[in-house]
Amino acid sequence: MKFNWKIAEKIGNGFGVNCGVNLNSNILQLIANRGIDDFEIGSFIDPDYNKLYDPFLFKDMDKAIDRVYFALSNNQKICIYGDYDADGVCSSALLFLFLKKLNADVFCYIPDRKSEGNGINLNAVEYINSCNTDLIISVDTGIVAFDEVDKINSLGMDVIITDHHSPIPEKFPNALSIINPKVNDCGYLFNDLAGVGVAFKFCVGLALKNKDKDDLLNFLKWNLDIVAIATVADMVSLVSENRTIVKYGLIVINKTKNIGLQELFKVCFDNKIPDEINVSDIGFRIGPRINAAGRMDKAMIAFDLLTTDDPIKARRIALELDTKNTERQNIVSSAVKSFIKDNSGAANDKIIIAHHDKWPVGVVGLIATKIRDHFNLPAFAMTTENNCIVGSGRSLNGFDITKAMQDNADLFVKFGGHELACGCSVSFEKYNEFVKTIKDYAKSKLDNVVFVNDLNIDMDICFNDINFDFYNDLLKLEPYGKGNDEPVFVSSNVEVIDFSVFGKNSEHFKMNLKQNGSIFSCFAFGAAAELFSKFKVGDRIDIVYKIVLNEWNGNRELRLNFVDYKNV
Ligand SMILES: [Mn+2]
Image 1 (cartoon, rainbow, N blue to C red):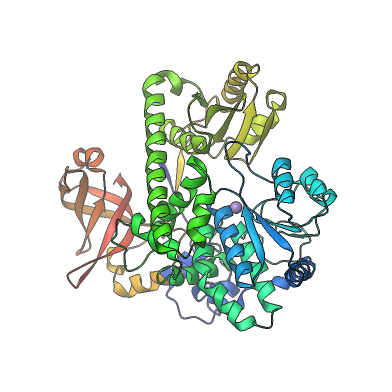
Image 2: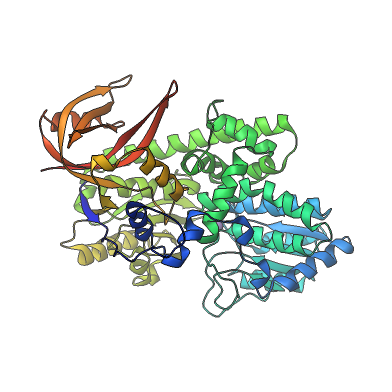
């Protein structure tokens, strides 16, 4: 893939001078690159759990909490209505564990992705009513459930919506309370909480109004592992409150008391749990296994894992999720492989539309992502479900895939999404027209466009600047994640001293690079085939990399992880 290098603009001399923290100018540059203002530097470097915003800023919080305590003192039955992705499952588990702690009569309902789809649905409402439920509390969903909330009301139940999805402008379900930071006048100060962040705020509100406040707040602190996992898995930005939640959540994760998570971590790391589980472990190992439940089967399996206190049951579910995750990976990779093999001409179009009757609806988004990345073109992956063709689209900067659907709205039974990702369903009758129209549309919009990916580089530094002091300063920027990417550096005109391949199948590439007398090893894992033939000893290159620490037998060494290069 070709990258378009974009080096961040240099900060002025005044930046950060009065921030109250002593930081070198390179670190200040990195902070500025992340969009942090002068006055936020202190809280960015040192997030304070005790300074999270007051849950009662949500204007509907009081009413919601009074309603829950009314239910508790009158032995009313409460149903938590969740969603099947990792955020929804974790939100459900958090609220469930907390309400159990308050001795509530509570159960959880998470719809089935395949037969019910997401959101509150009318059949589920009937079922929940038949369980003699008095109060429904939604988590990570509900903000567009207009008819369903009316139905709940008509059956004599109350409903509290907690959600973080965007409302339809100025149109809200007729719920008792709506707690959602994306609602314009909700009163809250940070709008990018995950569903679990909103559920967490709700629990903190409940705790603050309880006579056992300290005990309950402590209980919630110990459940920050669940909150952090869902916050990372839901890909919200790791800034402001999310940064604080994840920073403290990681501390809890690394000494979790949650039996289900203990067993899940064992399978995630093949019984070799690292000293420090980090954000990318959540993103690549933990999150996908929780998501696998809802993608491949029932999300309630993952909910059971997070809420059980039986180690044997936890072990069984963790293994099951691990198997489902492997199945999911196999299905996605073989789907993508066979599509690429059978559609060599697909790259002649400006958008890829892939369809297979047997692809599970829970994985089409993942398939679309991989097809997009392979062809470097926007892509839809479609499957057949409930007498309709349904699927997901994934796009690249420069092509608004949801606008493409809006401009051809009559083709669709249903659609929604944003610029880079969407979901849709199309009737059998309209499917061929959909394929032709969307391909023509893309052709007209993208005639002379070649998608080039921007590579954002933080700054040009000299090898002489890379030392343990600098590395220790870099650690202050962790945890990395969306909105706070791991720093990427470029060093100019470095000399290739030597290079080699290593690994079981000689799949990895290593080179030693020198600049002004300083030498660093640069590693490109899995890239030997691509890189080995590109270099000669003595070449001069500009190298783009991340700085990593390597430790073995008590030795510590700073290394470079390869990102990209150019010949000088
Ligand atoms: Mn969510």
